[in-house]
Length: 243
Image 1: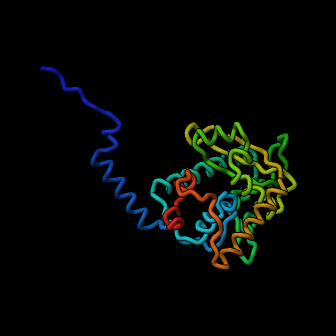
Image 2: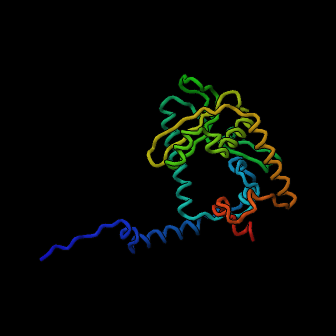
Image 3: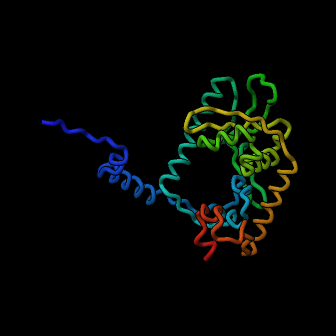
């Protein structure tokens, strides 16, 4: 009698009744509990996005992220905690989650909260203390792009975020320490980012423009006039914007 050959094909396993049922239950629980309310302020983390209308929507519209997106966010937080513990063990003294690590401007309409402020640490060429600490977890392609091209070219939105934080928290004397973890390989990249006053001013001016327009109930221009543009296809506000 010929022996039966078992098929452990991953696609079959992933589509099993148990896997799909458990995922459906988890996703439903997330959607019921984790709906993100409209942010009451314009965040420094989004001001660098190239589409000003999306910045307005990100600020003003209640958004619901898919459960998978939420897990990606949580992954980033987890890697940040791991990096903070490892850096502390290496002798870096990082202040995190205190009033000193945040700022508010424009009557509270513009705010930001940094990942940390490094007050002391090992003697490393190119670093000085105190300095801003910003942390990101990236997929392999994005991480390699950052390694190859640097922050301003690879992720201008993050570069704007860093410059704004340095300016508003008066951490412009020393370069910021930008830490990026490759979420696929767990490689860690650290970049020293000098303060760029011109970038900080431009990002601040964008914030003023967005706040004034939003207060006046005016929609700013889209980044493109083509609904088929890939940036619109990727935008969570596409339907609302083009309707």
